[in-house]
Image (cartoon, rainbow, N blue to C red):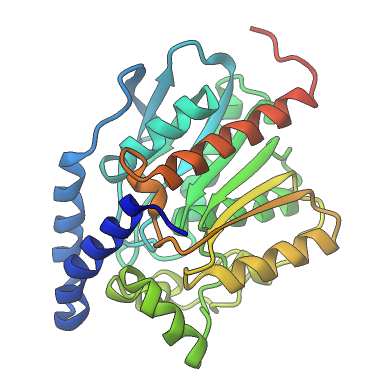
Length: 307
């Protein structure tokens, strides 16, 4: 059963997103609200921020004290490909960096509808190539992301594999959006009763803004539709109350059937983006701790990286 802190969070989100669901404000207004909410987030005290320029793309390092200097996490934030920024996810990325004890590079990739597919994927590839050019080895890089960022990370893996580029050591998806077609009918409506924040934020509409002229079933738009052979170890976290749950379970089964090492961790009754509220929701802290355990397990099976 979800914690009392999560129940309070759910009540707050239901009240906050109700007017959005009813009045359907412009995307520009939603962006302003989300950015304003980010003002109340704080990075863990022992994680240090450092601005970065990735070939002209805004980015930042979040560096935990004592992190390994040769290993890195590339983070792709969520937001339906249309909202979100370094600001909105800084606290989550900082907490994740601390849990994993990894220097983490977060990027401000381009958003739809101004920049539809493949702009976000191109920016993710740019960041990955930049890390390689900076001297990081592929086996010392991991990729992580939440929601749309989780789906983008998986799409990046497919793209790198098909391009013959060395793959990272592992990838992590926090409630990843892996199929822009989304579930349908009664199933979707039932899920929305437990995840109104997704309904309010118009994920189906946003998927169309991102895909634009490209089919929603294109594997680099919806990696759940792609061929998954040859991918590195994956960790996926999802709540059974999320709209995305069934797509994630199908993806996990498909990956497992093709020999991909995948760990699926299912949480009970939690809202989408529960990871963002790690400061006061114990399930979020638990989830981030499990990500840290996963990353340490991956490194433990590899050769030691030189310091």
